[in-house]
Image: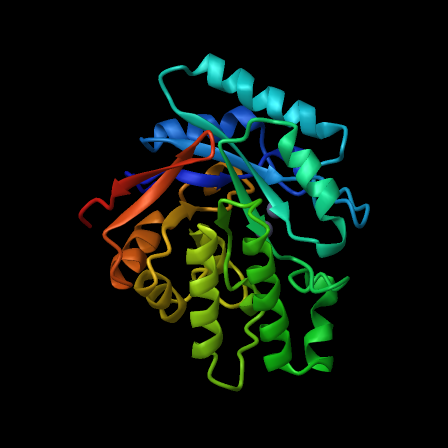
Length: 270
Ligand SMILES: [Zn+2]
Ligand SMILES: [Zn+2]
């Protein structure tokens, strides 16, 4: 196991229907790794579709919050943050905002997993990539990321270029689009996450790419770190690579969150 001094803020729980282990095992793993801090960010229930394999059910949201609070009480010497990963679904933002306002989250991750009704990052729907113009797909996807940032509901956008998950690359140069995204995130006061899960997807890369991350740094968009663990053994997985990635893009600090408050921290030496 690799030890790492960075906090892992993107940890799921079995409540989402596609993660393993027991919730406490994720805490034990993080403690064993010597992480300074950890945060759960399980999937907020979905409002636009019903699919128990994608996110926790509406009844489970209070249970999720209670389980994390119980762990906070059980391990008072170890900072465990209560986060959530909430989809951006333009047609259901009132419901999403209401659900998010019901609890005192430490931070809220925004994610885009749907382009209209197309769940583009699900293997069962990836055939749709072959029927569309890939540049249009990228533009639609990043357009939604910017719309999400502008809502003011999210503290951090997760897996920023997850549209590349199955290895589909834009044909045209997207630098202009990425600059627009960086400007929008900065203006909306939204951070981004370095997410390790892409290393284990067909694309085999960290989200976001070094190219995008350099642009984010240029615009002063802050970063967090997340494994996107769906098993206790995945906590802080590949964090040495995330650390190098951040350094490679020129970052010298990162942020953590508590009570929706952003806390800057220096990036440790490699
Ligand atoms: Zn998940
Ligand atoms: Zn996600």
